[in-house]
Amino acid sequence: MDRIAEVKRVTKETDILIKLNLDGEGKSSVDTGIGFFNHMLEGFSKHGFFDLDVKIKGDLEVDGHHTVEDAGIVLGTAIKEAVGDKKGIKRYGYFVLPMDDALALCAVDLCGRPYLQFDCTFPNDMVGDFDTSLVKEFFYAVSYSAAMNIHIKMLSGENSHHMIEAIFKAFAKALDDASAMDNRIKDVLSTKGSL
Image 1 (tube, rainbow, N blue to C red):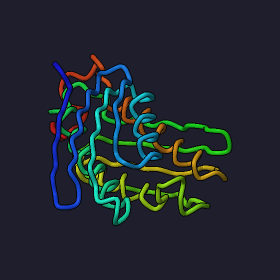
Image 2: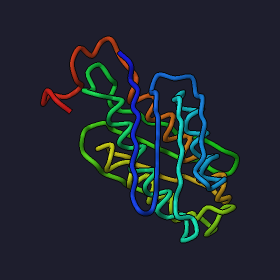
Image 3: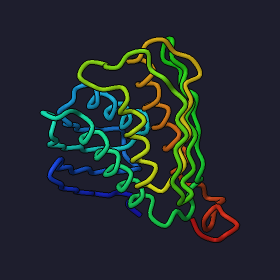
Image 4: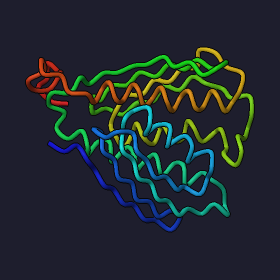
């Protein structure tokens, strides 16, 4: 069974196409118009072993908010479509990822219920041309459109670039774990019988 999704979303603010293969090799082609955001999504792809194509035309003349938030909506939708009925997946995943001064924890549950817990404050307002306040907006959008729990906690960190990169990579590793198949799970991992 191919766990691949292709999602397109067009508004007056953004035109977004995302293709996601959960069972990929970590190959990516990313063009968001925001250099640092490209770097984060490429890292997400590489470290989660997800094949990811992202093409975004956003109203960057306003700022990066619509581009980043809407990317989260589309990526979350792609995750939801790619995991499908969730039969046989591990459902939960977590990772604690070090990156120099930064230590980020991310735990996820592909439970069908949206929730974001985000415990991180960045020392800088900007990293390159990326507004650091948009990290939370991105993961909020992912959590709601994917209908998944995401808990992110910065355990330590001083450098905003390292902190954000650690978050994206920890999320990738946690999602890779949660979406992995386990042959011991014959249906869905829930006493309710559905996720």
